[in-house]
Image (cartoon, rainbow, N blue to C red):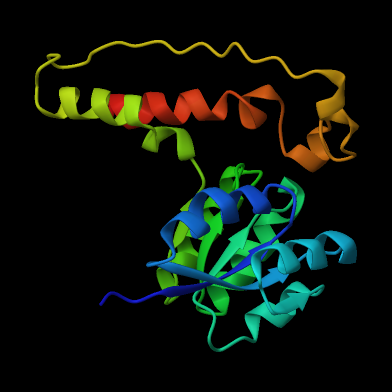
Length: 196
């Protein structure tokens, strides 16, 4: 029998999707044991919905949990960097929504911290794991498409006004970048995944 990793989800907005689409469908691998959210109604609602006993408001409470393997950071981007560093320093594995951090210097620091940690870091780039992309990857890896030399990527993605009602969206300081970071990052990840 393989190990079941214990998980805490931080941020109950997109974090709910992580629970539904990731952890609930892979109960043989993961068990969500804690929810962390500043909003008590959202925190308790998620915990009640999924039968999660531990409900915390303070991120530092998660770092002290000896039986916790993975911290899944699903918060607004401007707090990813300090949370990722703290979780790695606590020896936890970290899954983090995009964008991971806001600068190359922060990338370097996170890489260095991961190298010293017992934990591993995985940024969320879910589209590369979709069936279509995986089929293309197999074709390329098998040499059936020839060697890729040149490629392009375009992003055609529209968000209506309702998307920007969330206070941190649409602002460079809180999203850590413009459309390249918020939306085009996914096709660019797929592009680099396929092209090498």
